[in-house]
Image (cartoon, rainbow, N blue to C red; front, side):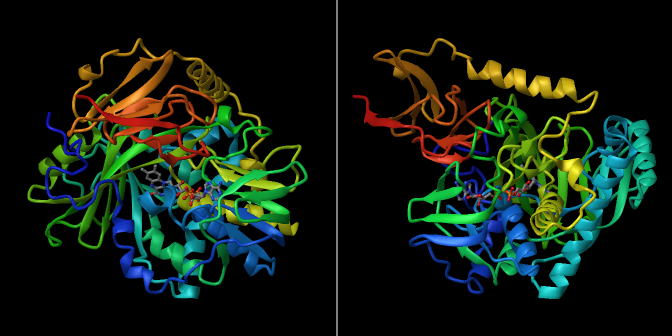
Length: 511
Ligand SMILES: Cc1cc2nc3c(=O)[nH]c(=O)nc-3n(C[C@H](O)[C@H](O)[C@H](O)COP(=O)(O)OP(=O)(O)OC[C@H]3O[C@@H](n4cnc5c(N)ncnc54)[C@H](O)[C@@H]3O)c2cc1C
């Protein structure tokens, strides 16, 4: 099979840029409205410091500021440069087939609270977008989860969702280019342009960009390279929390990657009437954005090599279902997953009462971030909130999910001590445009060989907790199978929880 993604960093069929989402490519359309944001220079004293300017951090800061709390956001790059820039941007309380499962494992009260909080979040987006007149391609649509072969599962989910007060119904008719067995429809959900929204809502916030938090000291002092911050409350919204002890998030979270493409095609050619997702994790996700169709698939644990080339799978599906369409953008993304499919929102740990966290959105961080913002605002402002206990990070995993937590922990611990296969010891054995692991002077190195015969060496020990990095040929990156940190072929950090590059040992050309 011919890869869409060529090893020299270009796509094979006119796709514009490698790896950048449609939202980022369209960024120039919003940059004019954008404030120049400063770096932190010097020390600060503040009521609340939010670390991480993705959707979770920005919404939390916004909610707090609305309550009159003085708050700053510290962002190591620019706002929206993490997971949020590569999302699909569906705003929905329909998170896969989650409601039967929540009812079974968490009980009616908690399942109801989860449903209500996420459904409120859907409505809150509409409210905020209207109030602030944010132009972010917002449109209200139905969201569908379909099955190609199991009507029973869909029927059960419809019943569960209805019982919990959600706007659910069953249908067999969709605008998808194939017949489904059944689908569950949630009415009045929405889609938007996440980066336009982020810039719109953050206009009045105090944000320090290019300000990386290196450490939070025991007494709560936040250290950055440019100055230190003393805050009464700290909120960690860095996607994957960067403090390992306390909290132990590295055994409570793993990351999953998925691949997306934007197809350009004739607008009149049966545009979708809603957002769609296959209930089967190997299936596809669909939504429109203007005259593009977003198509995604290929979910797998980060750092575990995907058996099939996800981009090829998307390309083949596109030509089968939407003949004549062109892939204009293709990118990938990853999110933190929790064993019980419920995010961690609330106190970071019992021993850090003034530090809060929002993570583990299980690929549903649009509503998840809104829920987090409300809960954390209420905790800091001491407003009673009856959903807080559902998302508490130190919650017990209820029966039926205990084994999942054990699975996550065990596989993480196994991977922590896993040794790489005996590496190819001759560099020449590495194919051009590919990578391998070699032993050199007693050390293991990851080696990427480019098309011009340059060899790029990195250490394969992840700087986060020392797991062995694995090569991801789909994206030419070194990925950590334990916690999902990722590095490019030169060792530059792409995704946290690692806080620094993996050592780029050297680059050389073999004669
Ligand atoms: C393929 C895919 C599709 C998805 N589609 C949807 C969808 O349709 N609907 C939905 O609800 N959810 C979706 N999600 C999930 C959603 O995109 C994420 O849950 C959400 O964007 C996470 O936002 P965040 O703010 O937690 O993280 P991020 O956006 O990653 O923000 C974290 C920020 O923290 C900054 N940072 C990190 N470390 C530091 C530090 N030390 N100092 C300062 N700053 C730091 C980063 O630069 C980054 O900007 C999808 C996820 C995937 C993988």
